[in-house]
Length: 237
Image (cartoon, rainbow, N blue to C red; front, top):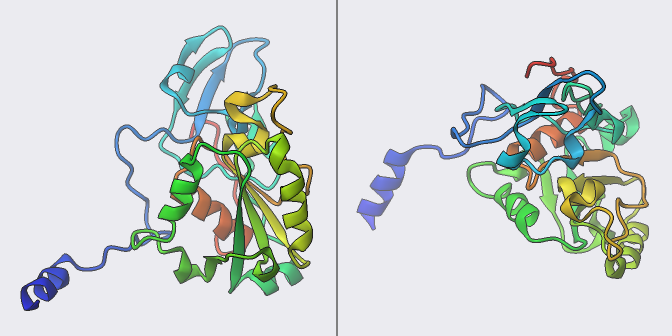
């Protein structure tokens, strides 16, 4: 037992210092995409990006590459769409709502037709590395005990009514967070007759990714709560 305690002491703190400092990502990490658009090219939609290697490279619409920038959550769907991959970062909540949720926020997860990838990353937020609870944010089991919803998955036809009922059961004021390409716009299943598409309820935070990295989610949440300054990313990433 004493040897185990000594070994644990030698390991030191395992919680990431974020938001202080610049987070280190592995070489294979694919963050916010950017593009050098060709003439007449359509805008780049970060919310629809699946962050797959096949999406990068030179093509008829320009040269797409992935940066190592995890900051890409936005307050609006339109904020994820631009000619170059520039993202309009999250705006802080209004004063009174921010006062209510800024120090203590309880969220209810709604899995509305997901592969499980986004939920795995959300679970990681509660581990010792990211420790979401140190920011006063926790997940709860009932919408009646929640300040907001976190939606993952495509929102299929069977979950549409359940999502609406969960939203209505959450006391006001409340926030809604759409996590992952599927929740934002259907992901690779967009256009399928089996899905209802993007949530038909007001969304306050869009977190792109397939799945999003925990720090992308954490960055968006902290900006929404006014814990990080609002700024706009440069086009080159």
